[in-house]
Amino acid sequence: MNSQKPLAIGIIGAGSMGGHHHNAVTNYGSSVVAIHDVRLEAARELAKRADGAFATTALDAFFDVEMDGVVITTPPPIRFEPIQMACDRGIHLMIEKPPALNMAEGRKCLACIEKADVIAAVGFQLRYHPLYERLKALIATETVHLVRTVCTVDYYLSFRMSPWFLQSEISGGPLPEQAVHVLDCARFVMGNPKPVQAHALAIKNMALDRTEFDAENAIQMTYQLDNGVFGTHMNHCGTEKFSFEVEVVGPHLRLHAHMTDNAIRGYLNGETINESPGSQNSLGLDKTGAWLHAIETGDRELIRSPFADGVQTLALIDAAVQSRDTGRFINVAELN
Image (cartoon, helix red, strand yellow):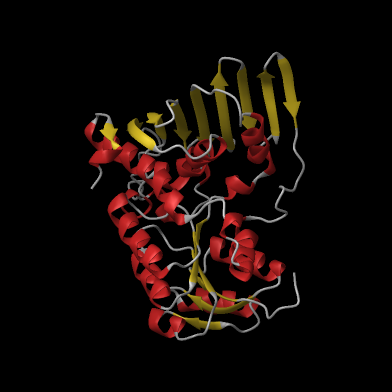
């Protein structure tokens, strides 16, 4: 992308997301120099694609390689140690969603990041999607009272996913594994209001013979944000068709952004809206490219998903998860 020396990037987690980030890093013009995974064969396989990058199962050996940034694509319980090690070395971070498994871990990670003052982004790609960039622009000066989000995937029908996605001890369940994307997107389009409280009802009532999976398939969530907006979220991970949807409602608007259709439909101040944004956002960069360019230029404004803000979305998720277990509204201020 420019004439300066290519950035050297390490990747922790050699699964599908590790492969995705490898492609994004190399497409940008940077170099993948090290791969870590608990499965050595997986690390070696991805290292082959990275022109012989160093492959290892040992974090100490991984961080012995000189690098400018590290991408963390591990399951959510494995966040603090690699983040701490990167921060100790002044290495910039791209952390896949959710930022951590819960707020207790999220705060520990954030403390390391703020002390080291590294550029740390969370992999919320919807913030870089032209559809939601356009929705954000449309409502920038408007009053919004309600927001509704929907996430549907086919996991409990197809089982075409990493098994840990449906194992609550590892993934946290569908709220942090799936819903987090559109809930974060709802915050983004409204200018990043902070969560106040959340409540969730959840049940697993399908694939009952698959006892290795305990994650709920059906969730209904209600929450409040500090800008006065009330939100609802519907999540189902056993339905045929994938969908990410964000809908906002106010005195003079009702706009529905549907990612599968790449369309915003509804009305705004008496005008009918039916738009299909183009394929590129105003930055011309995806989440990985924005992070890499921020490292090169020092321009942190390129990061639409900084870790400190990602922790606010994590607080919303954590409150809903704790509500799911208790049956009551959980105030974010109560989170451990």
